[in-house]
Length: 563
Ligand code: GDP
Image 1 (cartoon, rainbow, N blue to C red):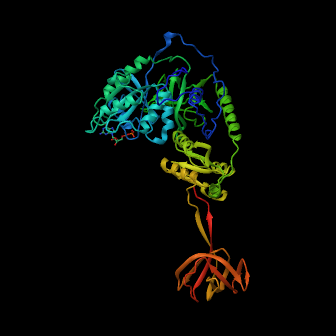
Image 2 (cartoon, rainbow, N blue to C red):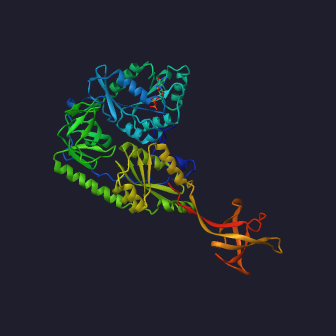
Image 3 (cartoon, rainbow, N blue to C red):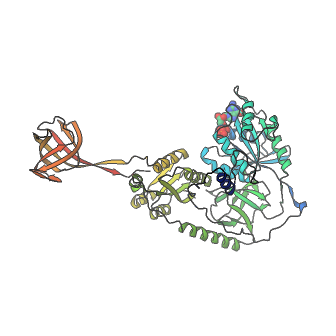
């Protein structure tokens, strides 16, 4: 507070202030490892081909609130969103297929509310954070039977950092062990004192199962929205944000966007990240074809030249030519940024040997996933993995099946391809084999992360491959003066080799496994003895060998740690 910054116990303070505070207490700040991937530079000046309009106040109209359910896994985010959606469906027409567009809208008390879909997985923290950026109100879902959990606090911090209004939904209030008082106490402890306890944050008792309190929650959302005086100008050129984007059969690239201001219309020339195109159609979450989408409306945009990235901005350009030029420039900038990232050389093949040495190395990855959101979540989760010895570097993170181009990119940069919910195009596996590129497919994000964590931590067991060297038969046992026993053998096939591994079999039954510690041909120490010759061998432990026993010599080769 002395440094002019008001922050609760769970909030981040600015770095300069953190430094000052640390200095005051005699500590020094050590900054952590640099982020895995420098963000691709965004053109310094946002594209504004049209002069920015300053709207006259009278054209500012009320816009619907954008709401995101956040919270710990299994506390009921999805159930609550579904419950709200199903009790207030509008325009349910037969034959219309609900579209998954990353958000949905409902009409309640004559007003519209937009809900951003909440990915229900811990690894999707990044999408949650992204959700909070377009969000006005975060409904923090806390199971009343369980209380605040790790991800509840994490979600709350994202919401607070994004300065969005928080409403606590005490879900599962129908359960006998629901303990609302505990939640109120935890709200206090986490700096969001509830209204019940003299604070300002609403704590609404709800049950997605019985429907209890759902209207109270919606009432509260509308009340908060009213107090926030959310306004937008539907007459201006649109600004929208990509929620998710993908390649769709029959439609080509599609981008689900949330219009934040202005109105997006069919026929507009859109520039979206490094993609562009004439908006061919706009689809609502209810499968309707819209002519336009105003503030706070989520729509699927069809007609772009490619698949943009989640979080990309969509703006409208005066002409297709200008849109294309700008998109091309952005692609060129991205390419330069990627090229300047010198690829570190490390293949799965030598991963193990690198890991067993103490060097810090880079594990290069090419990520292919079904939707942008998953790819991003994977990348963000990777950035959080421990990186004491090996760090991962994502060379490419794209949507779609694994192609020959991906393999060539991976081969050139000694990368491994990680596929999430995608298939490998025909012929690509063969090419990968020829190029020595490893492709790993996953459908569960945790498994993918676990594998990579293991690889990064050097825990992957190397594959052991045995190479047979030769065989010998024991002819005689000699006892040396020092008490050592030596076996006199004739090499029957291959070679006997000093320091090789050896096993001894009697009538085909294993009686000993160990190593050759000395090998003599007559009186001379030798490295190896060929088939047909006799030799004296000392093994590292004598185990009552007898003439006639068979000795096998072999070596263990450590093959790659397969990622
Ligand atoms: P999410 O991971 O936060 O999206 O949680 P889900 O919506 O998938 O819910 C997790 C589990 O809790 C599911 O088995 C739901 O049926 C159950 N659940 C959700 N809401 C309620 C509720 O209000 N009451 C009860 N009894 N169970 C609920």
